[in-house]
Image 1: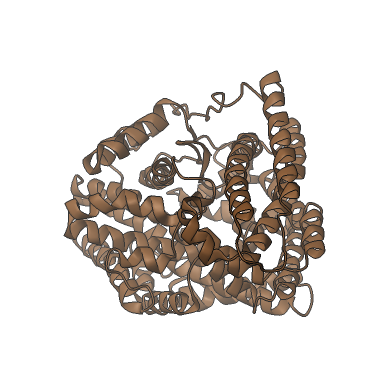
Image 2 (image 1 turned 120 degrees about the vertical axis):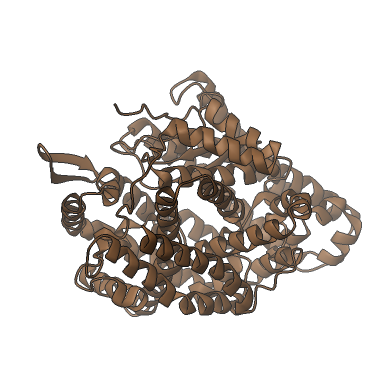
Length: 597
């Protein structure tokens, strides 16, 4: 029998989208934005000529800062609540309408943020920090705002860009997500052809039967082929907009902007990718061993996620939940209680279904609460994903007392707790398993690591090439396919059949439509999390003493500064090589188990 998988419950915020409580909450956010706008106008918040910091300006700053944090926090909860419906059912027209209405307020807040950044850039920040405790609590934000202010267009241009985004980049991203989430695919399965949502089709990549995997892969490619016109238009438009705005704001390139947004520098990202490329022979060895296990001369793309070995534990949702709670408890009661609460209070939406967004994510809802979207499959990999997303929820929990601005964590550091928690659960599972089960667990772990090191590098190369060519003109779907295949061949090499790759991965991955160079932060996060886990093994008590403080500060310092607290230098390949050595050891263990079994 199929296990009944939970849908998340957000009724603790509002009873529903069409209730008086929600209407009142929405109106309260509008009123708060109105009041914040009036406050900005009263104090002439915006770009101005630099002047000595006087007492009225100091008082205005503290008042504006408090109001801004409060309003953005209030608006965020409303936004997350609406998104809880949009992401689980893109056909929900009421949710889509409310989201469109909310975006009007988001534009207004964006304009206020632009004004605040410009204002901070005009203030004497050093004197402000010396005289204001509130400013000192937000020192990192203030210093970053000074850099951002130097890259702003004129106030009128910034206002126009924010207003046009609703019908520009945001509209293209919305089109992609709505369109892609509603794709359904016909595939030939046992019993005849079935029409399934794309998320379910992609889950068939984990099936043991190679015929099913191949049919799903071929059906998926055919579906993407028929969907590329609007998706290619969305990608071209988004990347074109990013190039134009980066140029207007004085950034050397979209990559330079992405590095700033992720609180790292070029030296760090070069060290990261140097170590990653050095590890490719090991990952190719893993894929070749997997091919041997499956009785294949070489893997096709649709074999990447094929199961290896025979799982002795089904890892149903209930089993996964109990195991996660137990293993989190071995680290700390606080982490255990967070996981138990998430399962008991139905923070998790686990069932794959039509109209639901593919993949998994965790979103902060309010205070210490989060919500987790997953498309759960009863296997070790499904449990690993839950552990990963619950790590994000724990990260949100420890920042419950932070202001909105203090919570703004770059993607590079956003993976810190999630990778750590995923590793906790994996190592515990390996320690309690038979050799056959260890093979299954190592395979799931190496699958994920291969995606985050090898595939992420291919995505980085692809996005670099797209930006370079998009400077000249729009790219056709066929050209995007060729760039994606080139990147996959450069990274996977001889470990995959070059005639059976996935040219449409640019259409599959939603991150291309939401951010710039989304890819390297995941590689950074994996290796940073593994590096921290190594530090935990060396000194459990000392690590636990500083771990929550590290997570709390991820929005209040650069990555290199935080890493230095644990004796880590991010700007040389050595740290990244040490983290990759953890993965290399698992590849060796995997190969040895295959040979033994």
